[in-house]
Length: 402
Ligand code: CMC
Picture 1 (cartoon, protein in one colour):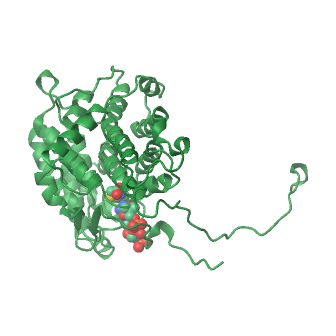
Picture 2 (tube, rainbow, N blue to C red):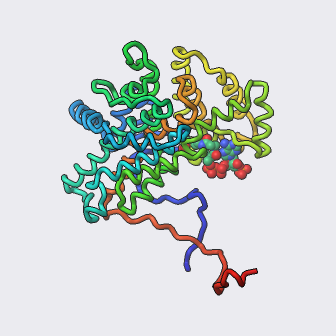
Picture 3 (cartoon, rainbow, N blue to C red):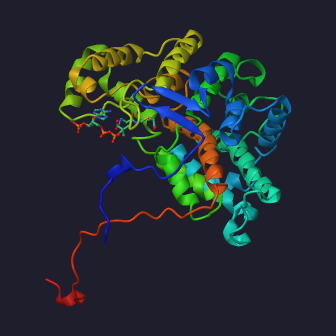
């Protein structure tokens, strides 16, 4: 009664006010807490940007040192988590492992679960409850890389590596995987820096599907581990965080550059999707895609060019000049080039979405914290529907059915 719908896919529904990330989709502008993404990518680092997203201001030296210490200190996992990873089949998708592991983490920290503590656990202005909430934030950011490294190593049948001390966030992640390392298992500084910038670029993107999912789940006041697990599940899909993996599968299926025009025609006939193109908010190129393209060149200097680069460049050129894509304002998003970098770095294809999920934990937590502390408290997200199913009918016993 009184309901009018429908905003299928939430094309025109704003469900929150937010001070975190600003996007102007027509102009191709992205800012975290007011700072242009281009400035952060060249001058900040992932962990400092994480602080900025969560707390709203760039940290002082001591604030940053304390944040880094807390995140690092909480990177170690309960030893039982190892059994969880070992219980997966040898070919389990790492995003399935990540989703399960985040959900399982919640069972270790009962103080994070408001249903066990009463609904007033997170109270604005109460320093103890805010400290408790921040502790869960440190844990989730710190453990995200440890979980991801475990998902990587378990499939190789290799023992897990404890998070090291004395390394930055991204370096520590690479060290735990024993990936992109040089002498003495030290990660390559050039590649670690490139990955750190990619992490920074992926840290938040306002109300995308996964962030919305985290807030929807969090609005029931469940613990943040469970909320992050649902975000991870949402990110897994090929229209979202799985797109970087889908781009490479698409490029492999196209093969060499001479097959590109035929592929583009198939997209226009709606037989194929051009993965890595199009965005709900951007109606021009995603500003992150330019930065990612530059990082690709830096990475290729170390790793050598990816053989799919020529195909990707031609696909980009043809699509950007084709009426079908121009009319629909379809341009590269962040995923178009990032997959090529991850491939050149030697990550397995199905690990690409994990490289999106790990930094996005920060964005999910920034939004979750903002929601928990908003004035007036949290309102459970419970949309309405228009019922269009059958009218009342009487039950028919199974043997009497036609
Ligand atoms: N290839 C071909 N046609 C497309 C594409 C594409 N990648 N994206 C949109 N279109 C067409 C779509 O068919 C529609 O055409 P028409 O108006 O004739 O029916 C028109 O463009 C508008 O698209 P839409 O599907 O209404 O747009 P949306 O906002 O619902 O979907 C999207 C956004 C990102 C899901 C979509 O563009 C897409 O599927 N892209 C490929 C997957 C991808 O790269 N995802 C990563 C997104 S960025 C990172 C992230 O946030 O996860």
